[in-house]
Amino acid sequence: MLLAIDIGNTNINFGVFMDKKLVNKFCIATKTYNLSTLKNKLPKIKFDDAIVCSVVPRVTRVIDKDLRRLLGKRPYIIGKDIIVPIKNLYRNPKQVGQDRLVNAYAGVSLYGAPLIMIDFGTAVTFDAVSKHKEYLGGMILPGLKISLAALAERTALLPKIKLAKPKDFIGRDTRNSMLGGIVYGFASLTDDLVKRIRDKIGKNARVIATGGDIQLIQQYCHNLHRVDRDLTLKGLNLIYHTT
Image 1 (cartoon, rainbow, N blue to C red):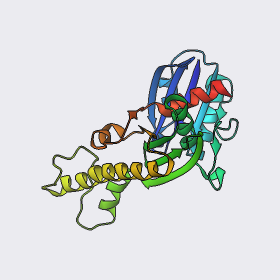
Image 2: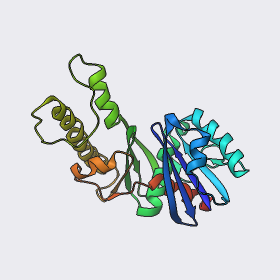
Image 3: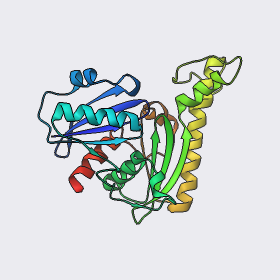
């Protein structure tokens, strides 16, 4: 049994794998994570190993310590103990977030290449993989929730609201004008960037989307081939069994 852990800025996602099958998963908010919460959620089974992908170094250190205590062994850390087995053509390869490389590798392994990976998380990332399965790079944008919060924080009259489905395309009140701007705006941005990336890497590039906000925005995007909310966890399991 393998415990796969994806540490993001907003949430920590945990997946329990039996060989290639994801048999259990749960989530803990990153800012509220502690050992007690993990103990309560972790299945009472014997794990052979644990593997971690993280974009929050401080939390990585805490979870590393907690897993040693709970499992009796240290986890494999992506980027430190295991290098994602994909050719990385970033100008400075060390600058690429490990989650982006894991997603790219998982996407290519499961869906083929060329490929466009989109992760609607705390930040929205677009990543391109060539027909030769090379990681080319991509774009990083503020996420939907960050963008919505910035409107309230940086303006005098706009309220703080929660991300939700807008009622109308043309908002008829402030709340729905804000929601429409964020949701329809990001959907249109997504469709246009997909078209532009395809012009660079191939018209046949498949588009795979993941991330915490994908469930909300997927119905407004027109160029997504597949939504896979567990892609990063699946990628960690694939990497563990490959390397």
